[in-house]
Length: 110
Image (cartoon, rainbow, N blue to C red):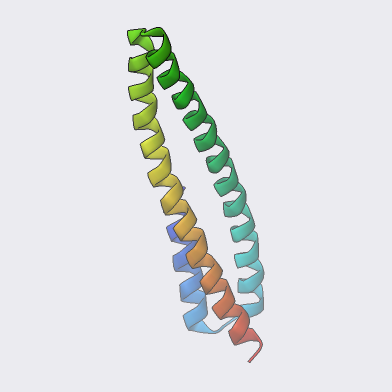
């Protein structure tokens, strides 16, 4: 998903430099931002769910002293870390697309 985001950023930046078909480019940017915002929401919900299960497994380990809960908590912690890194990159990429779309919009209306 991050690779797709970077490709869209390159497309929009090159269209911004060319100054051709900026209205179409702006409409394209709005569609891409909407799709990526949906993807961002899905990743946020998955991250929150996995984090909730991590908390439950850590509590299970602490309260029940069952080593399987500890192993599960460690594995989920690693998974949550990867999800957080991915979500961070996705969030920052969408923010960059917002800025590019704003620049295109400003150039259309000048």
